[in-house]
Each structure stands twice: as C-alpha cells, then as structure tokens.
Image 1 (tube, rainbow, N blue to C red):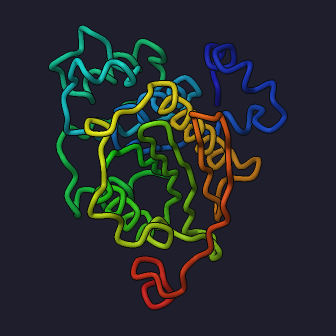
Image 2: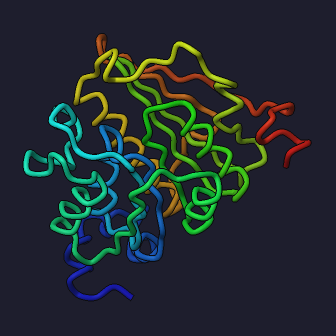
Length: 251
C-alpha cells in the first residue's frame, strides 16, 4: 500500500486517471535497470526516482569528469572524480529517500548483464556506444524484457521501444544490424545538453507508460529529433524475421 507521505509526494501523478493509485502502486513495485548515467541516464534517473520507481538499478563503470557537467545533470562539481553510480545515488537519495537504489559499479560482462536484466521489469539503454547497445538488446531479448533505447549526438537524437513480449516488435538489431565502423562519440563530435535532456526525458516517459500500462509506446516506431530545426519525424520499423538476435530461428 501507499503510506501518507507517498500519497502526498505522488499526488499530482495520482490525480491522472491514467495513473491513479493502482498505477502508482505498480511503479512502487517496479524494478528498472538504467545502463549508463551520462547525458541520457541523468534525466532518466532523476525522473524515475522522482516518480517513485520502487527499485532503480544503476549501471556505469565510469567516473565523473569536468567535461560531463555540461549535460550530465545528475552530477555536480563536487562529484568530479567520483564513481558516476555513487554520484547519482547521492543525488537520487536526496530527491527521493523512499526508493531503493542498487549499484552496478563495474562493467557488465555477458553473464552479469544477463543477471542484471533478468532481475528487473524494464531496461533503459542510456549508453553511448554500439557494442553496449547490442549486448543490452540481446540480454533483453533473451529475458523477454522491454527495452527503451535512446541516443543523441551533435544536434540529432532518436528514440524507440523494443518489447520482445510483443510478437510484432522488432529489436535493436533489426533496426541497426551490425552498426557502423565509423561510429562517433560525444567526445569526438559534441552534443548539446538540452538535446540529451529531451531524449532522456522521453525515455523516462516511455518507461512510465510501459510500467503503468497506459498510452501507446514507441514499439515499432523510431522517433527522430532534429534539434537544429526543432523538428520531429517518425519512421515505422518492422521486425526482421531473419534477425540473428530475435528472428524466428532464435526465438
């Protein structure tokens, strides 16, 4: 049940007919894994903690650098040199001491990633490299856990939801295949803080919709964001029957 403090803290969410007390209870009972506590993971972690997710699993092996602070808003100047997980725990605990925070401070290998994904209800990929995204996707497909995937670089962002519980849903590999050898990072190409804030906020929104069970999630759709022209475009994405990760021969 929700106690009096929780009823007050989450009252503006509970007022929404799509959430109500039953939906807030679902959030309280939910376990969510956030992979990456950088530009995308920062707003994701802040909003999900504030929304009352019962258990947040935080995965990042990096430490806070001064160059992170322009966009990674869960961290602050006093966090420079600290583990990103520890920095985030300090901030999230201050925002909402009623939730549980589970730390993953080291890089997740295949086995530990599989265990981490199996132990939650939903995963948010907020990482910044293709190999991690591929590994997270494979783990989510194997465990049949929904994945909210976001990315941003320069002045462009994208977002989609992959839900292996739905037979029509593609997976990340259906969309991107083996990626690009010329993949750039934010440290090489740059990125604006508000853009990753926007993508991360939308990831948090999709997560709340999936966990509570309202609205239409971005399953089978890829949202493309052009920050330069403030334009949004949506592409339909179909499942690839021959996909080496989620195809029928691998299901």
